[in-house]
Image (cartoon, rainbow, N blue to C red):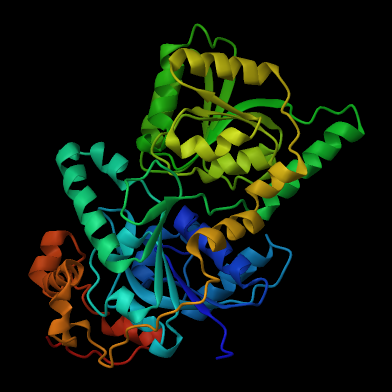
Length: 467
C-alpha cells in the first residue's frame, strides 16, 4: 500500500531530434518526478543506426541505449537547476520516411511490468496507437491519459487529396484514442475534438529562456543600455507548412507597407532552397540562415518574433520568445489562445492587421513580464495544470481490471459487452496481420521487433502471437 504511484510517459521521439514530442515529455518527466511523490518513467524510441542517421542532426549517432540516455540526461541537466530522479526506458521504433515520424514496433506497453502499470501518459496517443497490436492500454493501466500535440488534420489537408485523407484520418484518430485512452488533454482548440477531452496547455518553457528574459529585463533597467538592438525574426523547421508559406506571402503582398524593415529566418528542412529562392525575389531585406538553438546568444538582441503559422497546436518557439521578453506577432488562431494573456503578444486577424501589428511592434519596447506571468510560462505551472486536469492525485475507488494472460486476444467473451470492447477487439485483429497493417499505412515488418533491435534493447527472443 505504501508503494509510490508509477507514471509511465510514452512518447514518439527523443533527443537529439529537437522536436516537441522529444523535448516536452522529457521536461514533463523531470518536473513530475521533482517532488519525489511518485515514480516516473520516460519511455522513448530506440532507432537502429540506419534510422538514427536519417533522423538525428549533425551526424549524431549512439551505439547503445545507455549512451543515448547519458546524452539526454546531460542535455536536461544543463537546462534545469536540479538532478532529475526519473527512469528512462527504450522501446523499439522505426522511422517512416514518408510520414517523417518514428513509429513503434511491437507491443510497447510491455516495457512496463504489469505490477507497475498504474498510469500511462501517451504523448500523441493517436500516433502511438494507430498500429498497436497487443494488450489493450486501458486493460494494462489503471488510468491512460492522452496528450494531443499535433494538428494532423491541418497537415494532411495540404497534401494531395488532402480533404479526403483528413476526413478518414479524423475518424481513425477518434477511434484509436477513444478505445485506448480514459482521458484526453488537448493543448489547444487547434486540434480535432475528441470524446472525454479537455483543453489545457500542459507545456512549459525551458528554464533557460526565462533566465534569458530576466537578464534582459535587469540589463534594461540597471543602465541606459538598449536591451534589443535587432528587429524581427522567425525560427522553425524550414518547410512551407510550418509558417514559412504564410509569412512569405504576407511579406510579398505588402512590400510597400513594410518597406525598410529587415527580417531574418532561421531553420533547416526539406524546403530550405525554395524558401531562400522566394525570399530573394522580395524587395524587402529577408535573410535566410541555417537553423540554430533558439537559446543561442544570436537571438537575444532580436525584439520581435513573427509567427503567422496556423498548423501549430501550441507553438514552443512563441512561448520561448515571450519568455525571453520579446514582442510576438501571431495570428488570431486557437493555437495562440494561451498566449493572449501576455501583453507582448500582438494578435492580428487579417493581412492589414499583420502589417499594423508588425510596424507597431518594431516601433515600441516590450512590456517587462511580471513574476506571475513568468511563472505561468514555467514548467512548474505547466505541471500544476497537468496534475489538476489529469487528476493524478485522486484515490481510485475501483481496482484495475487485469487479465492474467499476456495477450489481449485471450480475454473471455465478456469482451463483447460493449461497443467499445468490440471496436478495440476489431482493431487488435486487424492490426495483427501484415497485409492489413500495410493497408492501414504501417511500416513493413513492424509487428514485432527484429533480432537486431531485440539484441540492442535486451528483449526476449521473438515469440508468435496466437489468437
